[in-house]
Length: 136
Image 1 (cartoon, helix red, strand yellow):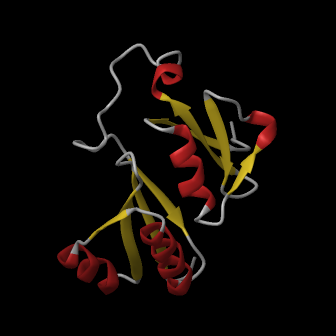
Image 2 (cartoon, rainbow, N blue to C red; image 1 turned 60 degrees about the horizontal axis):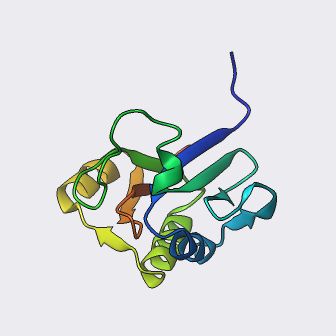
């Protein structure tokens, strides 16, 4: 069955800090689904990120949450329309406090098959991959 939307639920240590970070990427906070325990960040019409305080996040998962400042729990990949869009997003993320991870060998492999990508870690260590693919 087809999906109509994607919601990523991410635990965050400081909800206000995380909201400010994602707003600096040009994404909007949907106030209708935001309170003192969670915030809905709208990336586009089909993708939203639910920032959940760590205490509130435990309502959604019985297993221990990943400590994303030390380990990778997942990689959130966003296909963008151009290499310039990739650079713009990652530059905004770094300016907002993200850490860019550099992967020179992987980047050379990607370029050989018509891809361009860059990786950044948000303030809680969640790993984002902004990329462009030839022909998308």
